Image (tube, rainbow, N blue to C red; front, side):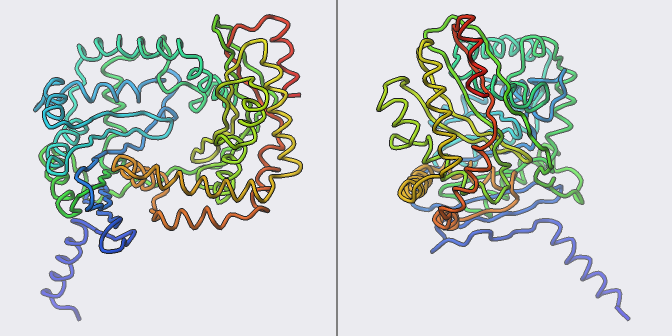
Length: 459
């Protein structure tokens, strides 16, 4: 029989574990590159990566919400909210927020994607407590006043106009619509003029309360940081705002799903008086959790990821048909995209598309050579390491990994996964992805006869 004192001890121990659970996810040599996670009561996760050799730190908060969480009438609400969180809290005005970071030479910004949003600040390591206090205050105490919504609406409409003036950017939104149609993944992250004009402060506040509770948030911090201190400071900031939530709540799981994307042979053209035609030829890719993503990364690098890639050599170096030509992948929770972009003179569109299609068909049927695959693996490994040479990139990696995968890989683990990709795996994923009938998106000043011929590129 258990004594009352034993029950009390067990209860106290259980409560202590509920207060904060800390795990070492990646153990670095001498503490360098060590990644730790603490889950606070209420479901808020704090992940840090320690790099004692630098004098900076980047602090970010990732929200498990993006434009794919919007209904048609709410399109643009996530991005609108991103703007509004900089407009002031009970403790700070918009000027106070920006001046606090400017005064210490820091940088602060945010970005919205289709499946997540991130707010971050990069500062000297000695100024990290200030960055934590300011960013946490923004995330937990935003006022979202009617007058701020009205003022910021104009700025967002200008941002939409700016995108429309840049067809090299806008063609990616068009390609998403070509592939996904009129659903959340196919709509622009910024929203449209009509949807942004229709959004009200009340609707945005409801969206904010629904998606910004602690279970939907991941705090990520990288640089010359002490994990325990970061946790204490984050916890204090959330407690001050009364934003830790229900102590029994658990973090939301990474997105999953089994969406099958079978779009093929679709062509969408937006006529625009531009000097270049901007084209994307592409097909369904892989979800970000697909184990074949490592092989696809190698394939993408060899096909259109650098100056020695097939597309760059064939389109630009040998024929001079385009200045910019590349391939890319986008992975979501349950589906993905593979695309080839090129910007060229309108008179060259059909030649560029023919060459790109020929290269895709050639690789789908015959694969890449062993030399191409070996070079691509080396390029991918090198660019990965070089891309993680600053604290902002490290913060992005651990924050996105926690939110989207719920796990952390060390840099060495990532490099090993890339190095383990075999030529057969690359050829298999090439047959699967590139063997599908592509779709096409174009923005440019194409004449009627040229436009009518676009379907030939996807036939």
